[in-house]
Image (tube, rainbow, N blue to C red; front, side):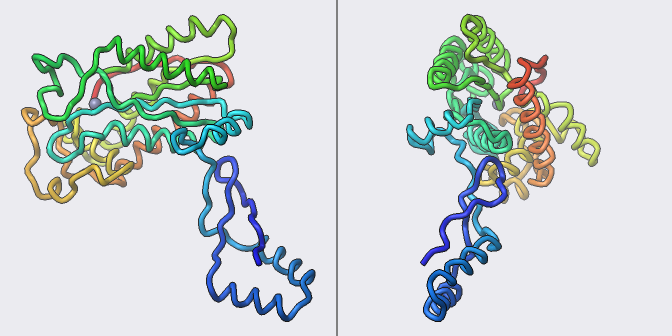
Amino acid sequence: MTCGERHFKPLVHYNKGGYAFNAVRLFLWLKLMRDLKFPVALVVCLLVGALARPVIAAEAPVMLEEMTSTELRARIDAGATTAIIPIGGTEQSGPYIALGKHNVRATVLARMIAQKLGNAVVAPVVAYVPEGSITPPAGHMKFAGTLSIPESTFEDLLVGAAQSLRQHGFRNVVFIGDHGGYQKSETRVADRLNKVWARDGKARALALLTYYDVTQEPFIADLEKRGYSKAEIGLHAGLADAALMLATDKSLVRTEALAHGPSPTPAQGVRGDARRATAELGKLGVQRIVDTSVAAISDFAAHGAPPTTSKASK
Ligand SMILES: [Zn+2]
């Protein structure tokens, strides 16, 4: 027999209950069922079930790609009316960090932000972004693996994705961008959408620049306070960048080579020295990104767009 599914204290919105259910426990339940009359056993079972500690607490689904269309419909109808569009990019980060850095990091962080919000869904990550001239190659395009698309194509893509989400019933569409170079595009796109959407007021778009900005001065100050130099913290694939990657998905960092290899140079596409980067340092940045983003999105959903700024690039 089964004690049925239970709902525990929600982590975000709701949990599917999981139980420490092993062979010994099964045997005891069967024995109880045999020894006691069924109704008595059922009452005991329900009582004990209520006290059972969940082993796996599955959170409300937040990733659009992992849901069926009907599951998504139900989530929207139940009040999940904020959609986050994570923007990554496919870009070189030197010899020790994989080309998917921005894509993976934006997706992991978007998931964390959505889970904490409780009423948000994460759209598929945008992996193709403007990285400058292709031929002749500019900036990161000089290194194998970087993929670049025209800025106008990128902005049109964001517009189409946001319009689709609005069509399905999302009321707040939020862009979060992991790379510095296209922050201005996010603002342009949100302005473009809000101009049109203001006509019926059904939805609004937000370019959440603070998602990126908080990894600049505040996170860098955290690292400096712990004794790391500006040169080491770096601007691209340095200590700050690598620490954030380690804290979000360490499989993208070649930790062995990083620990024992030489520090790459700007000529190798790196600005900074990531050799002393750790996941613990990265968690400081993750915490800042998630907390700041959740507060800003909540504020936007309640009052409209907060003032935003954007600096630096990585
Ligand atoms: Zn970048």
